[in-house]
Length: 170
Image (tube, rainbow, N blue to C red; front, side):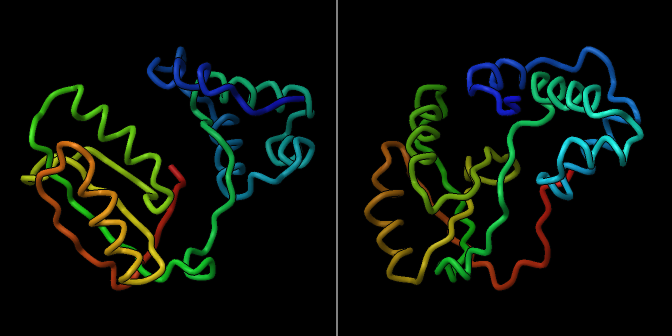
């Protein structure tokens, strides 16, 4: 059984509100998957007191509704050689849909960028989080890639001293 959705189907379902609120079993399944997405359908079914077929059906429905958007492994950036984590606030010269779309397309292509959000309440428009090997890597990223994106007019950098916690569980 295929449990991964096509990107096109997933994108369409992300914008639509849920037809009905999640029930207790759906919430339990989500909690289980967020704790350990490697659990088998049989193991999850046992935890929520369902047989495997209805359990699999519910998970597939959650995927189709865009509640579950994918499965991934959490990695340790330091063990992979990325010793610096940096938050960069980026200001744009123009506030047009085209300028923002262009920036968002380009920023997604940089492997060092682990998150990007449009923000409010400050003079910059975006807050991105970047992981790099060292200062030389950051300098190359900043001067030769980020600052060369058309429309980037302001950059403010803050280095992460220590991550207190991080969670992707909702």
